Length: 311
Image (cartoon, rainbow, N blue to C red; front, side, top):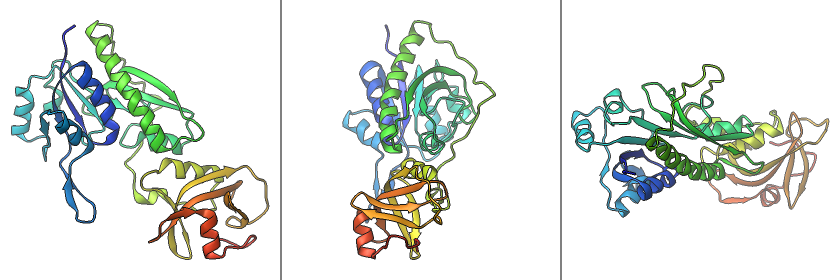
């Protein structure tokens, strides 16, 4: 079968596996990614993971400041793409671009649409306690992840999954899904299905404050926040008016009558703190301006006492 001429729009590490799959199987003619962003102490402009990968393969890279730039649109037209594939690019494509490819623009979205439309579907699926998620290949329109579904693949969210581990699994699943969708399309066996109107939910872009928690919350919710907000913004609370990030913790289904924030136990496993429902075992933390340490080491350094209230 003929290879499709494909332009790929993507930016973060998550987009690399699908990009590799398209490079291996189809005719990848160009990559579009976001412009270099300042990084590190010197705030030097740093290329996106997608740009680094594309340059290493000698693939044409475009990084427009504005997608509606007439010159950029003309460049895309002149490349004569059969298909544009988008994966975590970070910007909404205007109608001028959506109309260019022969077979339209397809998006690799990390949720089972219509659930979790938007920028952060993996994080919000974990936060909401979903048992499964997946990849949706959809035809893009001018709405926010509202286009017809071409193909879906499901995956179970495991008990110990974090946004980091689930992202890695979904990136690989995205690679499988886009290759399968293209193969089916070539055979004329891919039928677009409009998204149902019921079951729509949204996964807005993450903000730093989303990671904040207190021990007045249920332990299971605190644990989900810790898993959902890795590597950013990271779940956090305060100790003695200083921000304390929590990287690892486990909800314990413990019945107690203590006030939320009471320190129930301190041992080498961590610091067990009472919450409004159950208790949370803090395992790995980082005090503002300090290095990441075990919660036991933190307790020793701060002279925490069993039975005392979290300050």
